[in-house]
Length: 96
Image (tube, rainbow, N blue to C red; front, side, top):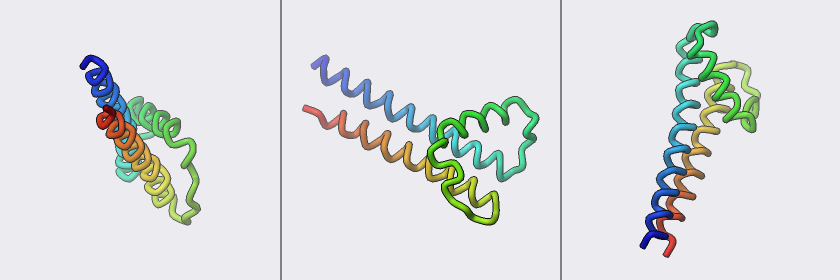
């Protein structure tokens, strides 16, 4: 029974981390689209965190409009974090 509880705890932690990553990426997209002040400390922190999380998908798309590159690149990363994080969490929950 305690092994099952460990799997559930790990699944919750993985899902929570995936949700936090996706939230940071979504927040950066929102801040970018709202033209947030880049000199603000919070905006800089969110941008740096999002850039780190989406390093693999940054500039993946070559749209002419920069806003489209930001939305697609960071949005794709957010979706991948959500999908993979919850997929792994779901697999852990279903373990015998």
